[in-house]
Figure 1 (tube, rainbow over the protein chains, first blue to last red):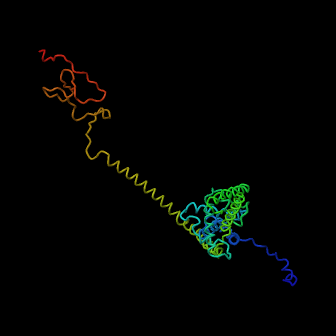
Figure 2 (cartoon, rainbow over the protein chains, first blue to last red; figure 1 turned 135 degrees about the horizontal axis):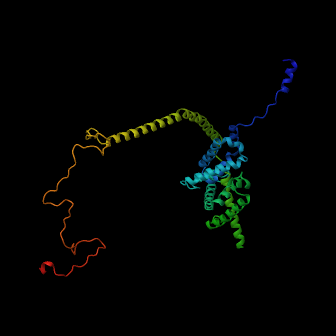
Amino acid sequence: MSCFEGQLAPWVAPAPVAKPLDKTQTIAALVAEYSTALYRVAFSVTRNAAEAEDAVQETFLRVLRHESRLGEIRDYRVWLVRIVWNIVLDKKRRAKTRPEGEDLADHAHALPAGDRAADDTFISSQEHARILALVDRLPAREREALLLSAVEEMTTAEIAAALGTTESSIRSRIFRARRELAVLLEKEGISR
Amino acid sequence: MNAENGNSAMDRGQSALDAALRSVGSATPAAGLEGRILTRLASERIRMESEPARRLLFARLGVFPARALGLVTACLLGFVVVAGSVSYSRHIRPSTTGTPPSLVLPGQGVGAASAVHPAAPASTPAPPGQAGRSARRSAPGRARIAPHSRKAPGVAVPPPLNRPSSDSQN
């Protein structure tokens, strides 16, 4: 090799092309990005930290089993929310052993950390448990829309896509749910 | 005044509801969730990668013997059925140990109809003083049915006639 060729080589050599992520890296990226949101979706139904975490793990196991289809997915968030949603509803349907809202420690854990006293936190978590028990008395469609709307990361469009309906339908379901809950809260005396 | 109270109560209810929903919707998972998920995914991936090899092994070793075993079983079953059938047929066949009656064939013709039997057929005479077995012995007169006898349903029995009997006439 001549001196000239030696100097030219770095310029002629093909530029390093950004290598596409392989399936493992893709799934790892999905875990990093969506695991918390999926946990919240699962927790909104199970109200139990361990069960919610199980559901999230089960979601990613399903993703792993169907990793060959990852390239076909347009919206990962909606796809994953739909998977975790089906998993938690299925679990809830099968195992009705543990009533929702039973684990007050989970509710206390769910509360954002603040400088309130422990008593306040506990009373507040009790009240939340009562309110969420009322939420459970709503019809399934309204309840699902309301719970998903409570998850911070979910937009109305994403909720609609996850539940397989339109945005306007989601909005009207949430409106109906809130209206019915207002009546229930009034009856229970929680609003006073 | 009441309307204002109602509205404020409703607002309080809605804010309580919002707070409860927020508590659910902003739940934070225990620390290290991602790590636990990735660990489980890694172990699952190892299991999945070892599974196809095991499946292939079964495909090589398992499927062929299963087919061969099925074929051998079918052959054995067929043999047992046929052998049993033959054995049963031999069992119910009339015995061939006894000698058949000898037929003396005439000079011409071949066949059982024209055969000459060793003992010529002869009629058996009826015993003297007895009627043949086929002769029906029945007493003369009318059949009688006892009035209190048990009869089949639907059978009507006429009432007894009040005629003087032949004995009394005589």
